[in-house]
Length: 495
Image 1: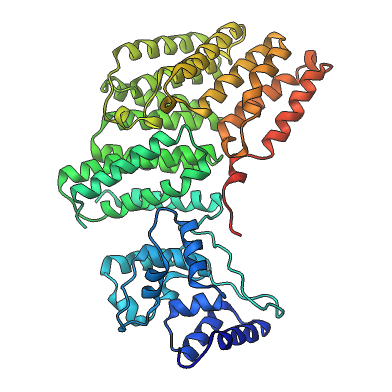
Image 2: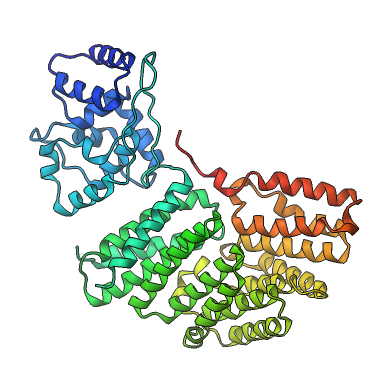
């Protein structure tokens, strides 16, 4: 380092921090005095060792490859045998160093990067916040915090909003890199993994992987592939966008959810896949239902009916089951019962298609169908016995299902429907028993639909007949406490 020792660097950093100089200035001065690369200078400006950077890198991107020898090669000055970095590596390091990706690269290093990788870096550069300054002259070191960008454990709202904007940009430009079989196989396996994990694992575990996978799929589609590969890519991109729509919905952001769902439908159209088209209409109806837009929910369900008739997969069951819930909330008992019957008939005809082969969130199981029936009947006055019975059947079916077919959110929904039916019948102790498994869920599983279902129970408990009941008061207090720590609060935030 041009004769500069670690102690010299520490003294320089401390002196400049005491002067209120920003990270960018400190890094640039270290680079000038030491003759090192910008990548190394930013690490030293943050008083981080290479092992510490590697640890933070792997925490932010646990599925990535990074170790100290690789970081050392990336930090070597261009032209001295250094390795040309990948865009994903620079983006992740920019998140750790609180700067933009392009500021980490010397001009010579940027020139050596592949044209596609350079384009990704330039595009992502604008997504990063401006560099921070050191606010206090007393600082003796600079403690890095993670900015709100996709490559780090950022605040969930920022992640969802950025993903929705990315989906929108793609949707606008799509109506207008080659992908090999290995890449397709890898993407397909990842879609299957995430689809099957979604009903069972907390969203904080999955959200980062979903956003990253969507970005990979979109970047590949922006290139050129053979027609059959393009069709498969659209199917996979549509499935991932659908999962991100569900994630946005679960985090209480119906507008971002609809943006993702529309993009999923565009992908389904480009793949000419009626099963995915029908599945996405069911998803849109479900988002509208929970957002309090029942007439939109009916419109989406009816728009998917013709598509459902053209597919034999379980998406054909989802649409009438979802439609039943919407007619029930609108107070149309006859149409709700008709839709429940249509879902039963569709189940008898259904045969697994390629979406069902993906499994998890991409399929509509019989236990879930029973839960939807309970959720419909709970809206209809005088149908409390039906709601309780269907909820019990759903829970029993889930209990007997294979572990891979369980769904914590739908099982929680069945429990809350059962509790609501019992409150409406005056059985408060029975309602408390039904609600206990839901109230015991950890914060990371308290997604939007579960919170909405619980608030239905809370509202029912406020009826005049329940005001003097101790158990009603206790349940209300517990629901209120529960709702103050939703799944969004359990997601990683910038430190």
